Image (cartoon, rainbow, N blue to C red; front, side):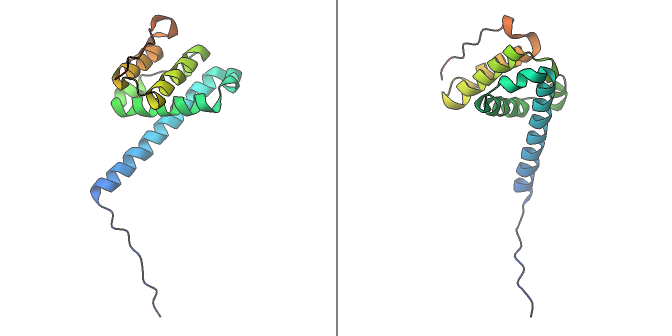
Length: 125
């Protein structure tokens, strides 16, 4: 007696979406690991919400950058204040629906230039 085989029909679009999500998650995992490594013991002072918001924000940034631009970001050099501020940007974008492009630009400036030189006032849509 043969058992019927259930087959998923996978089209190119759904496969592409899945590959994109896997690549995004891997890139975010590497970036978070680099930030954690750079912060050392200070990482323990971040809340689970901070980390969730940071991961979400990094995923959004990854989606807007090409690979070369993403590889130029130095997450291991982020300070504790910068990571907290990045988590705050992620929170405002996720929960409060502030201007996404302005928030991502602010986050990128934080990563590239440091926390002191960025005005973190995201404007509402």
